[in-house]
Length: 315
Image (cartoon, rainbow, N blue to C red):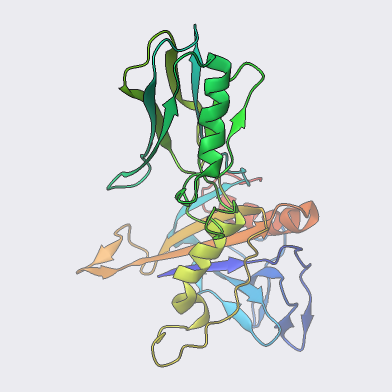
């Protein structure tokens, strides 16, 4: 069982109206000594509340996790938002002007998925062409292409010294096709070869000039996780006969701190019992922009799970 609870891009403080949690708020609940459900208070421990659950407020209802026994928690972890970074590679012409006409091929190899994907384009080089003009030509002909794959940024950059820099796609980039890229930071190699020999000029290439960083808590990634967990979170299982997709709470423009709580259902340490899943995995995404909301959440959860033997998670 996996579930994601997510705050909006602008988090909301915890408050209740007739038992309904404020739309967008994230709360942690316990049962008091009378069995009444109430919010976990800062400083509460397993002795005060053997079980807790997580709650996401919406305009119409509370979305709740299963009750989790504190003593059954196996994992308590978190990651602060870390922005994705696009990878880059370069090619350049140098040394001398061309002494004969020929052709160079610039080849791109996408490596972050299998099978690998390939793309290339060719540039004809005239005899006697200055190497600085060759760099311009290599750059300009790339940007003139109309078939650049979505995993490559359609804009290249040429430096004052003639180095042409290509950039892999990262979440939120607009591809040449007009699509918005949401598959994470692409890792690629770039290679330049002479397919018809050109005298005088030396061609060089370099991959991973800037390394790709996948990041953590990017809004596009959180939305994809929410999409994959629509069933356990919102009861949206029958997507064929009940095709009314619940609205996403994750915003692609959001930057989220991510918390992970994993517990067994029966108190054992086994992730499966006779082939049946025995884990409850709860993910909580809170936009990093509002420190007071994050602090309130951690202020209740950290002491509780500290009493279960886990260190504090401060994001």
